Amino acid sequence: MGNDRDSEVGAEGRKLRVVFVGHIARVSGGEVALSRLVPALMEHIELSVVLGEDGPIVERLRQFGVPVEVLPLAPRLRDIRKDSVRASGFDLRALAALPAYILRLRGRIRELDADIVHTNTLKAALYGGAAARLAGVPAVWHIRDRIADDYLPHGAVRLVRLAARILPSAVIANSQSTLDALPNLKRSRVLYNPIVVPDSVDQPADRPAVAGTELVIGIVGRLAPWKGQHVFLESFAEAFGGTAVRGRIIGSALFGEDDYAQALRDQAQRLAIAEQVEFRGFREDVWAELAELDVLVHCSITPEPFGQVVLEAMAGRVPVVAARAGGPAELITDGVDGLLTAPGDVGELAAALRGLAGDPKLRSALARAGKERSLEFTPERTAAQLLGVYRRIARRR
Image (tube, rainbow, N blue to C red):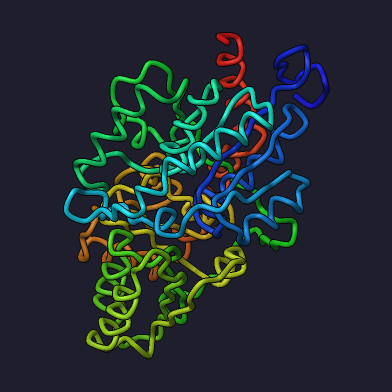
């Protein structure tokens, strides 16, 4: 990689033209992963990005010189929550807007003369895959959600699994756990999200360690019941209630989950830790937040498809305690570069946190090993793997 001879060749000897399709432009896991990946692809393929809304990711991509356009998707379609995709709760008015949007996207794919369409989100996989098929262009589905009954309604699981065998030419998943939830695929592979550590992040050889006092323990991510912030609060109260240890909840509700956000605040009051736990809200600069943490907790109660913030914390030399399921269990070797606890187990998480609070040498060892592990997830390595997928698809055309 790194010169014109390494470029992927499409029709008439030119570089492959790949159109990335996503439904939102917010600072969320899949969109951040996209913004880290495409700069590493730009010297090898011609690419453009089509998003269903304007937002921070548009400007972030344009700063890298990525051609981005917004093809507005109706809000009621764009913001459908996964738990509403069932016969009793689905918004039929949202569904009515879908065919026209698919036709508009099909036209844009043809105008861009795409060789491949790469869908970046689950919603985009469905409508983008249909638009690509109508345009006569092969699609790559990038799946970042576990297609399983503990994550999606049963009807949605059946729909996506069926569509995955019909619409895409290849499926890539952000973890083995995610891929395992899509059985019987002909062409698929795991492609872990890349990590990029900004030059501005100052990373000392070891983080300051003060055994058991004035530690800051935080959880970072969208506020949603399945993300387990309520488990974090219960465990924090059991481990550190009434002590000098501080807690932080970093993130906000994104998809109509404001009631849960308020319930967390009420829970902190009920547990008598409201003075110890700070609700930071949404923060775009996750690295600045991680730099102030002594331990990161990741405690989703259903298996996390990947766990991007886990990898970010490891890259920032922050020791991690994560749920033993899904992507984090693939990223972390328990006791070597992080700690794993049973999903939803308040007592086990509290015990792990108490152990880390009282053992600064363990925190330092986990932080160093976590940093080494994070070096395996570079954009260049991920891009090389993805180019291999594109190459195989292009050869079959």
